[in-house]
Length: 276
Image (cartoon, rainbow, N blue to C red; front, side):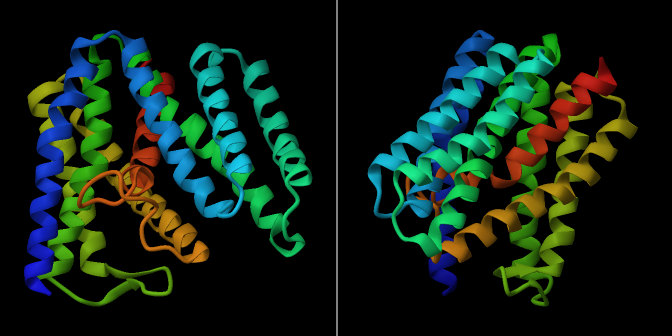
């Protein structure tokens, strides 16, 4: 068991060593549209993973729902400042979700699950992933730094939770949803988020006040763990362990961005409504 865990940890670090420089290169040296393009592609993969769980026997429905998600992402990127467009998206998505299931009827007992999966997933991923692109664009010179902060709040929280859960305590946090998560891991996750916020404040995002950085860490770090639990709940409901296998040692795209969707969204709101 320990050997398997160590091997998985090594694969995780290897994946980060390959993917990390690529992500940072696009983020810091590419224009905002290049960062959006990268996220747009990741959104498509994540949507496919989600709808593969929701529509396991219907490729046409998966393709349609994935295209809907990409349409929401592109609309949010281009017209996110227009409240009328966003309201239209919120009204249209549930309607199209129902139309999709009426078109691809399948088994009646699963129809409600497929409608809600499509409506929720389209907005969750289409808007949530684009928030990271908007954060890069609207943050000005500090835009890349705020994106890195959101990444650190998510991924250092995950790392802190992993080590705290492994070495400091085994009391389960929410075994019905995620059997491996522990209470010590939850505390360690908050500690990891705080460490990420401190690194950001002192190293590369000095314009962020320390009190704001700590508040972001505490709130976004805690809510990010809720996002992680929420995705675990979806997978358990669908009867799968990982959303996919595209990221070695990490599972699928959804397994990597469940908390990030929350931390990046929270940082985006901070930049738009507090910092501005």
